[in-house]
Image (cartoon, rainbow, N blue to C red; front, side):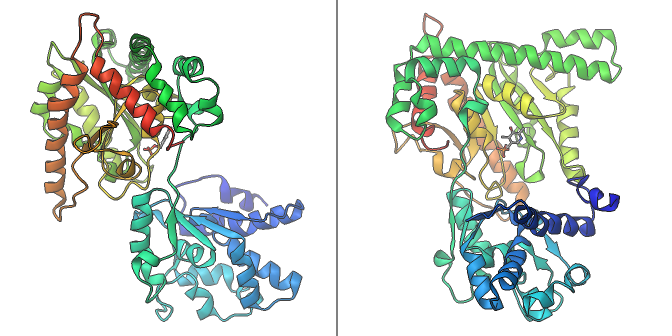
Length: 473
Ligand SMILES: *Cc1c(COP(=O)(O)O)cnc(C)c1O
């Protein structure tokens, strides 16, 4: 029926009723589809809570097929389910009110041989609260025999977040562990870097990417070769960005003079910072532009030019996220900044590649601990960009303090502090960000020898690749 097909025609933007139907289709329908195809998985991986109704269908199926009682079927189902939670942001988890659960599960519940209260308790923190909504993450955590977050810090935060599902269990024994995300380098690195790796590291960088000794060989790449490879990618990024900006202006019906002015936007030799991601508010895209005067003085230094390329999209319903984009676009039109600060619209994986492959510094400014892992920094890393980030998600375990560790890998903004006052926190961290740029990043980048090579920067690139690539793949 066409109304059934409509269930999946939009990913976002539906109401809760659409949402629950989508998740029933995914979890229960998905399970039945595999059954119909004759596929019998040993392990079902619930990637985020959206598919967790799967657990109910598995139990029902075991009860029917093997003539088991609810408790035995549940144990059997548990053994074949693992769960990964992906977000420490409350709004990122699905909650369905009891009346909505009733609408779709009143016929299903009796098949499990349990009563409504016991059924709804599977998704509640407090079984005795009749008003509490049914939480898909709670269901998944209760059902899976193994659960994990996606970075060390996120594992810890998840244990805190969900500890009341295991009353009386000490927080560090809550059965949620972590498996830190990684990226598939070949999908994200430039052809130029790929050729360089192939030549100096051999095929093992692809075949055994977790091998430390393989990545050590990065230090044997000739400095000028690594640098010129990287510079070529920066030039391509600048050319690509100008093309995109020109198309954006044309679409908006800008004057010819305006369109021509794009030619003096950006500088292929400037220290280039990239910031590209979903514009969720916790990612704080505007932290870098908090102090306009200080930003302008950093970007406009004629001897040591710095530029920043922003790209990103907000969720269709996230007005606050859209407002951040507006602020950036407005500032990027300012005559004082427009040559050094640009915004690329319609962010997607292809734009992401140009940016990740061409920037010198990859910036990430989430409000800790809201970034579960983050993966774009890992993609940038493999391309030779240096990460500059809040100690959140993967960076909290990747970063090494150069005062205590000789293996330099990039920079941390702050030390993982949290302040009660959000505005104060933004202020402190924006100041820290400007300080690092002025004191560390810019001087190292522009410290050139007679041959024009930034030797300290190049060794930082090598050290960052050699130390982190083996881990985050
Ligand atoms: C890698 C990637 C992301 C995820 O990036 P974060 O590090 O989580 O911000 C989002 N969008 C695109 C297009 C990507 O390539």
